[in-house]
Length: 213
Image (cartoon, rainbow, N blue to C red; front, side, top):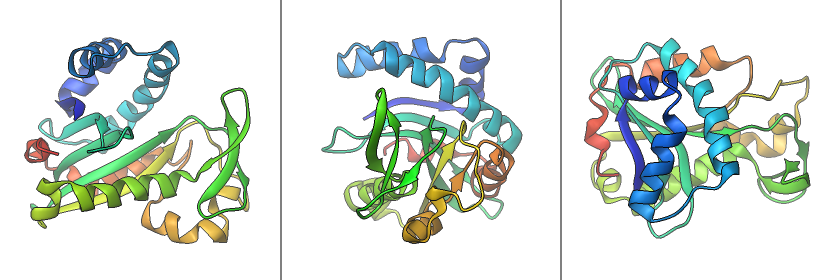
């Protein structure tokens, strides 16, 4: 189930008009018969304007599509942000972007596990790159439109828009290398790199073909 599927033009308008939280809240109520919590609403209103800056800087065509809160089939997990379109050669691409409001993290034991401040205290949780990669694998395994249409290339990454990368940053520790190589991390001052990534993969629009995801 997709909570929000609009063109980049409509997405940017919803951001500029300060309506994105309201639109998502109403869509969740209509499609899932659920009331959105204040914390989730606040999360959208903090993170999505940051992605709007990236989308604007990527200079995507207006018919590139933005999908928000895409509920994975047979799961309670939801993809934060997905952009679908075509590259310069007409290849179809979709980019999963896991959004995090983290400010710092620590290395932890366990495969793909880190420590960060969540819910009022420091907790163990999955590495953002691991999470983004797992969503990509899930879609490739369970989504018929992507599984059967090999012309759609699926990519993944994570954007930590409040996180300032430091030397020998824990999130880039060698134990997480495989996940980061598969799903690159973008930090507070690497938004232009993320915009360039999207420009290369989806700038030419026509993202409506992934509507059936």
